[in-house]
Image 1: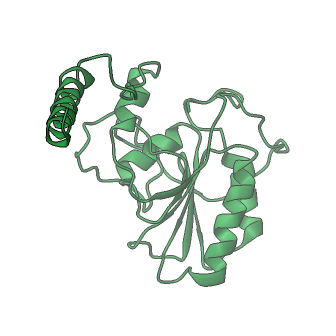
Image 2 (image 1 turned 30 degrees about the vertical axis):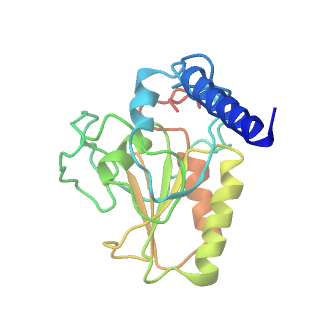
Length: 221
């Protein structure tokens, strides 16, 4: 067989091999990598929550169990912060705007899903955060025009440390604050004119895991 005939036969074999690859390589079940499957083990609540976009969340705080130990609080301890009238726990559709009796809010109608716990650079809507308070959370809001630099570093670091005890904490900027820092729990608001690790710790110890849906430290996630 001459060289020209051999070359033609080789070309014909390559074309056939390429055609077979295209035909059979794309059939279902022949792919080398399986497509990722949606996780159906989650509850409907968490699945709906996962579809929401939390672009401002830069550091999540895990809550691995529903029950957490409560910090020790002596009987008769005066809870820090101003107590506001309870506006209830009604759920409203996402996108509904709610008027609250404090800024930041401490109770009232809210969206059906809480925001993930952690540190934010863009604030979730108040209507999400109120649901976090209902679940026994403590929210640390700060005015980014007044709290920045080293103070902000210290504030976030303290929140990380506290989250090791109970991760139901959110640290978020709020441009409409009339104070440098605002600490909120269900029905309670404490304003700080500067960062104080002592004030943050006391507020956390006396309010964490004590929302209306908590029982002796057992709270929804």
